[in-house]
Image (tube, rainbow, N blue to C red; front, side, top):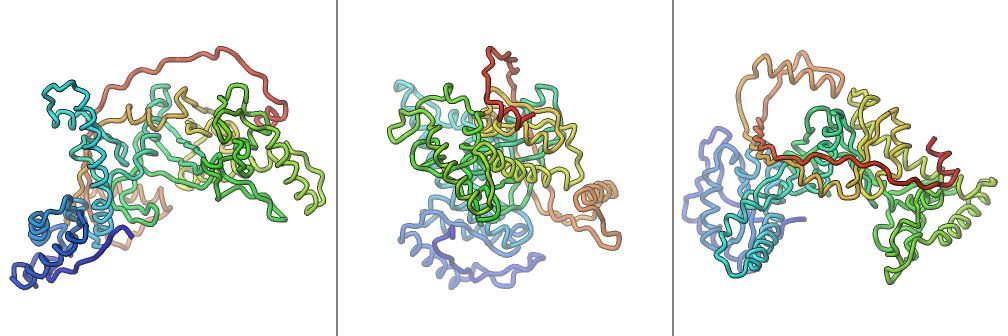
Length: 464
């Protein structure tokens, strides 16, 4: 639960704006004022105000906001400003999430700006100028200044930066159809791009319903830290993850066998190029011997239960095949199942573990082009620097559809679902307008390989 307490308000407007119960009445006004004061006295400093039909008739919300301001609430989220659309529950959930997150973001923003101004050697500094220059990544794929950055637009802004980064570097390389593949330690995020960023306008994240434009990202529980299991009859990869601590078995902290350990076992990790940052003191190299011991234990268990005679490399490759299949299925869900032929797309792999499985996933999907950027490990952060400034405004409308809009909608619906309803009316619920200020994007520098390192034959065998 994101909220601490709920206060009911004695007021009501009908869908046409007719006032059934006036909020101006002294009794309801005074009662609400005392309830808000009690909440404030209990330490609550942020409130969300959500009323029926206020997306179109916000009169009562504004009156309540005035009371909350007089009491001293630090942050007030009004539903007609946060999500000025139909559907009371979705609007309410989004407003509550905004009221929960925005004060935290403002605190860190102000603290960050304060630190910047303190380093100006006592010069006269314009705080507003700093706020205008300080840009934040939004979940819709665009940047926004500090004053206009809202909590509802911050989830999941990090992965959104990765999509923007992948698309922009691919476009500079001459590829305009892209599947983005962001694989980290716990999960993998995939997205589809064919000339424009795809967005979801209502979604649920960690049990919280949000109705705000968010880049379409499909996430599965498969990452470098996904734990390997054998359940008497079959191999399983994930969904449990070893996380960063203790991490994979090779990290020298007593962790379980993971997807990362499979790659170490097969020689796909060149351990001599890895820094010695593992172990309890952070000064040890990757532990190949520990992986070998754990795989031997696992193989004994597998061979005893299945009467086989498998080897470590064979088992590691088998677990990797399962992980790759799971991730490839996620890509199929956002592409093939929606009618897109991705054989002529580019697979852009990034994240800490993306490059380890790029070729196998591309082969599984029939994709012939793979792009791995030099900044693949930090492409989400790099993508924020390549993003444009975007302002998206939404508004509920009640108008008849034009033939052009209807035809366009039916085309999109048929591509997505495979059918259209000829005997049903189409209701246009809302309209969204996006304003984009394009930023200057630096040209990419081409890099040539300086040296090649031999890898184990079994690793090559799995790739070829």
